[in-house]
Length: 338
Ligand code: IPM
Ligand code: MN
Image 1 (cartoon, rainbow, N blue to C red):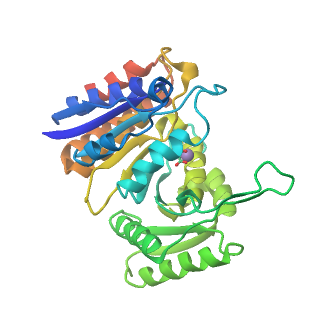
Image 2: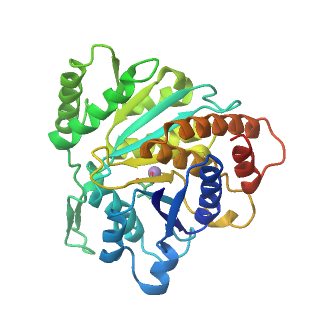
Image 3: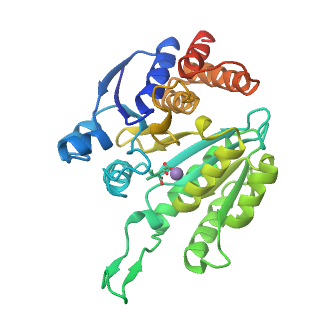
């Protein structure tokens, strides 16, 4: 029995999380779930984003499953950054979730049909770290800097994770994505670290792509990729693109991992709260279900995780083939296959 904190969140978050929990139950894994009310609604109601006491409680669970957080597009209820930095990034940084793992299997009919790739996104550094600031704000001479933080420690642990992952996959191929021709300081650190760790992994073939070129390859030839390792911001952008070309963001799952297991890891679909489709049944729960599948894998439920993954990919194909689907029907279809 695992203790799982469930943050349904806003918009379609609770709808897709419900299907994910249904599938976990159908896979025969017993969870003791604890619901946490966090996100835009809570912020608007109470002004709280992530109270210290809640963060401390979250440290004690086995895993965290999150739906989506965020206000409706166009609403001014929550200033930009409040939930992103105050909730999501605070969880990633405080729980040391230094890997953001995002798998993609190109659905039939998508631009990247048949592709099978995983992005290992560094999740605690880069421009997300919060370095920088503003001077002379609201004057004609204002200045804003937002530096990209890259530490040998942070880059190396991410690169090592990616090599270990690639070594365990059939193709054993790892591509570093960066912009070493322009970002010569951080790019040099990434490239040297990558090459040093590569020397310890003779079984893994390697490649390097600049991030702009990688965007072309993802759109035109995603099948070339097996595992991609990249920094936090490039990883953010490339994984939306990877989602778009492999069948849509409704399929894109993620695991925010603390590989050292000094605390819980967090599992969430890549998509947002999509307030415009709440209650319509249009939300695709496959991203949330696959995120829960990664949670099972992380918890050590390898056999259940394998069954859920097989079912998710089958249903992904079935949905791509057309027909009359809705949120609940997709969840049911995955559950029935278990
Ligand atoms: C994601 C999201 C987040 C990110 C935001 C909401 C902080 O876009 O998980 O990809 O930029 O990492
Ligand atoms: Mn993103």
